[in-house]
Amino acid sequence: MSGDTYFIPANFTDAGRVLGLFEIRNVIEAVLLTIPTLFLCIYLLPLPMTPKIIVTFSAVVPIGGFGLMGIADESLSKWLYCWWRWRRARRIISYRGEVKSK
Image 1 (cartoon, rainbow, N blue to C red):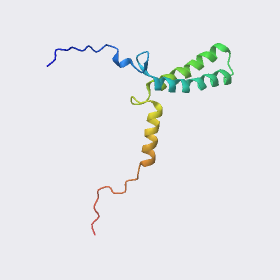
Image 2: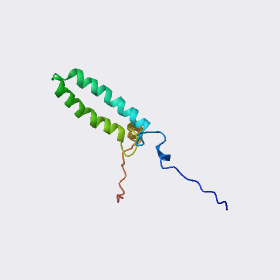
Image 3: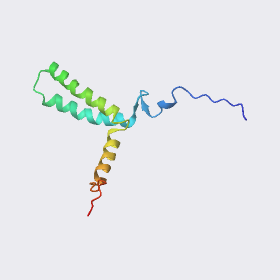
């Protein structure tokens, strides 16, 4: 047996992540969700500037957080793809285990 010792750095899981927390795919999805929401709120709300900013951030921050977290540790697009595949492949169960006697 060899006496080699290998040290694993504390930040080895940070590769491919932004700020060490969020995967790059989730960050891109969060940006793609929040930018249109931001512009829609800024241009369509008939409010003065301060309430407009408050309402905009009240909408953008939860949407961005949802995009960053994803669903069940998956990105939103991956979850949506899996859900769509399940939805297309599901079948109606007609046999419930009862045996009909004649």
